[in-house]
Amino acid sequence: MNIVELGQISSMKYGKMLSKDLAVDEGFPVYSGYRITGYSKEYLYNDPMLIVVARGVGGTGDVKISPPNAWITNLSIVLELDDSKVDKRYLCYLLNRENLKDKLNSGAAQAQITIDSLAKYRIRLPQIKQQKRTAEFIAKYDDLIENNRRRIQLLDESARLLYQEWFVHLRFPGHEQVKITDGVPEGWEPTLVPDVIDVNPRTPVEKGKEIWYVPMSSLSETSMTANTADFERRTKHTNVKFKKNDVLLARITPCLENGKTGYAYFLAEDEVACGSTEFIVLRGKRVPSEFVYCLARSYPFRENAIKSMTGSSGRQRVQNSCFDKYAVPLPPNSILDEFVQIVQNNFEQIRNLMAQNARLAKARDLLLPKLMSGELTV
Image 1 (cartoon, helix red, strand yellow):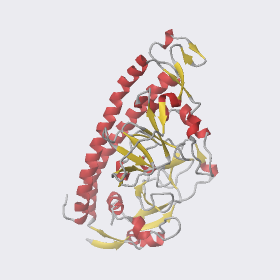
Image 2 (spheres, one colour):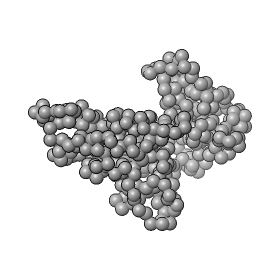
Image 3 (spheres, helix red, strand yellow):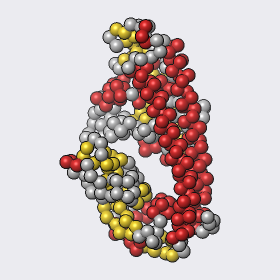
């Protein structure tokens, strides 16, 4: 293996801040390194690019490959690689194992990595053919994981669309024969949220017991799944506590606007976890957890929460009291039962796919260091 500096195999530049006149609702993705943050009339890079997150709130030092035809913002450093010496996917796998934040943090008040420090960073590289073989082998695991993620999102979206059809647009089974007055179908009960859902319920946990801590970063913007790799074990749990099948709703900007919501499927029946005070726990009392999750994802419910936000710019927080007067038309048990019977299959498939992904990721992560070190070859 050869030892090289990153500056010897790539040229580096910061991305660019997008000007307001280029921002559009639909267009080329604007990629910060954390996620797609919007869309642009133009793109900076036609090809997917290897980037290192240089600064921002969390994620500094993460290494990603951008979407094609993307505008990459100045939160990231873009590496244009000499592909005769290094394979893009191989280098992405390698650098993600290096913990760049701890090794290259400049020491500023907010963690950041500079081009100068990154260019001098030394790595060990095998011959290009071995890099490509290794990357292709590992990518098979990632492709399977990504396919499962897409299926999860479709299953999640299907459940939420059914909720919207039945309980927002009121096109539930038999709706043609039901009279609707002031937006409430006959036989449905106009009910305030606290009467059917516990908001931040008290969940006791044994003092000093080690339990999972779930950070806001682990929640998804597009589905119920959480990234369990971000979880930590803690014995101090003064934060919000929850249990299996509770719903975790982001309460801060921009997380709520971006849709961050979690469904706590990942816990055992008798297990308690704690998490950031940056989300609110919702637990069904007279409605099933699947209904609570879809309600929390619905636009009217989120809009009501967003309107209640107070606090300093950029860190406004939802007020729990916003739910006190929010009415939920409670359907008869027969309709609730029929809804749950349909969507439970989606939820169960999502759990199975997440379990598959966990096994795939574990196998990949066991193989990766051995392949990188040369202990195993493809």
